[in-house]
Amino acid sequence: QKNITFLLSSHQLNLMQKVCPRVGILSRGKLIGEGTVENLGRNLFGGGKYRIELELEKVTNGLIEKLKKLDKVVNVNKVDNQLQVICDKDIRQDISRLIAAEDILMTRMDMKQDALEEIYLKYFKEE
Image 1 (spheres, rainbow, N blue to C red):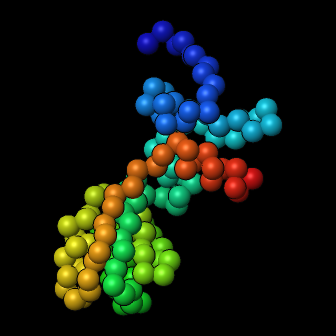
Image 2 (image 1 turned 30 degrees about the vertical axis):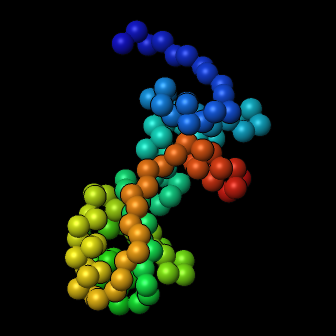
């Protein structure tokens, strides 16, 4: 409201995420990322607002293709028997129905929100 900016510096990124509506990431004296945690995460992790992680008994190419065709899905990443579905909407119900219809056992489903620490580490990994 009064156009006042406070600069806080801390290595306790989880606290910064709770306190600050916008953050900046500095490296070697230069601003390399700035914005809301949500937008920084979206830019780094490839699009969607939501990241849904799944652990399945098995992963088939057919399942991956069907997941990619669900409304609001931006991308699907596979590592072993785990999938990460990046999407613009919370579609956990749709995902559950699809996996049940494919007769595949799902052992875990988690909704991930971007943590500032994760974003920070990824920025420096890519630098």
